[in-house]
Image (cartoon, rainbow, N blue to C red; front, side, top):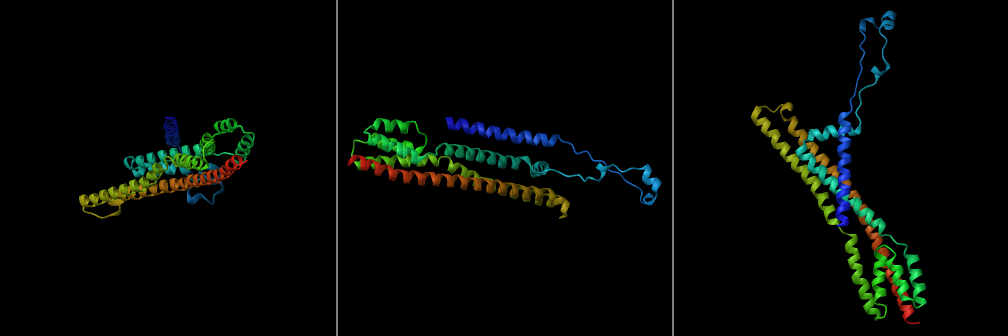
Length: 272
């Protein structure tokens, strides 16, 4: 439930921010001032004196990246661009949730192992278990499962650690399938808009009985813009997805290495 609430909150913030940005860009105006001087009077000093040219007139009208993006988004059609934007927002929200979760799952394993070893050498298993309880992260949870069966055989301890390690790996990889779904959906939605745009272009050709560029321009624009936006969204989500997978792999490798060291500590304490 907490993860769901966090996901909804992040998605709402992203949608709200994107909406505010769109409206802000839509509300800006681009005043331009042009000054025209008669070519016949250019050489006349009096004409130049009587008609001073404003410095702002020489500044060409330019559009910001956000203005261009908003314009292309509108040109692509809200019925096709909105699903692509929704896929991007949801996928980005899931990725942010995973990055936050994985960042909180990191543990200083060397320090944790040293504290556990010190407690076990003092025959204080409860103190070692308390250390694991107060340490966040999957590594500490796995160690706690092993300490909870400290009085049993090494095989039982090892099986318990391996089993619970699989559970922790599943939690680390949670929601990755949904992110993969959104990565696949983004270009699919773009290609769907492309097909619909081409159909609209051919319908215009059939209705007008003409194949001039002005007849097919509207449908072709929708076709190309939806494809471009879908591919851009898929590329961004794929890069972030690979980043998340890299973090998970590091955590899993750290968990496996720490588990081996933990079993060595258990074996040494039990045989002393």
